[in-house]
Length: 355
Image (tube, rainbow, N blue to C red):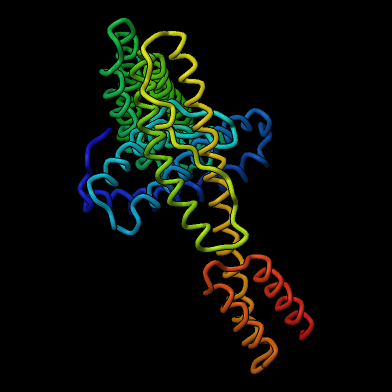
């Protein structure tokens, strides 16, 4: 938090995070579909919703980092803001709260939740994939070891004991597998226990952070919101310049709240105001992001209809004119969304009428 990350490292990080986000979304869609057809659909619903919520929080923060990154046009100030966005608590979007985990912690939490869901749904292949599952379990247990060592003294021994038990069970399974024993019925419960242990350690560590000194927490949150506000204002400027009508939501400036107070009563009020700023920034981000997404959606539809027209109505001048007009609206800044939507609808209606 607060350090200036080298741009070359940020580029590699953002590339890897983008790939992780896309892979995890595809995996969660698969798990969601499987859960809907499971006999335990109701029992699995909460796990699916939580997994989706964590993924959405990571995805939203990734988008804010991309806006701040601005295709690499960053200096020390921007990379410090990105550092704050990486290590600050994530916004929970539509749930109306914040997650007490940083971006890396949220990714680990998402891994644990997805692993738990996959084990509960028994989606892993059978014996052919046992070696891969054992390797993943070994990586999970090693992460649990690192987390257990970071536990406070009053609970560290319990966490280490749980890790030792998981490690013993995993070693036993690996030895059984080497001897050719059937471990298919044993590996699933161990995957569930490992995922739960890792999730509990992550959530426990996050909860302790949340309960830390309120003054430090307020200062950290204020720094996060300052970075988030700068990113959202950049997103708002981009939306206003790119589309019309654009949202007209105010983007609050957390610095207007003044310095963090020290007295308990004032600090409680300050934290309440910080939460209001956080929610307002989330609403502004959603509104301005939706406007840009609408433009991109209409652009993709127009281009798709143009490709389709080439096969079903080649050389049609009316369709060609509609496409030219649509592209002209898109290339104009700001692009008139209402007019673009009408042109796309007209193109679709005309195209369907040629069938």
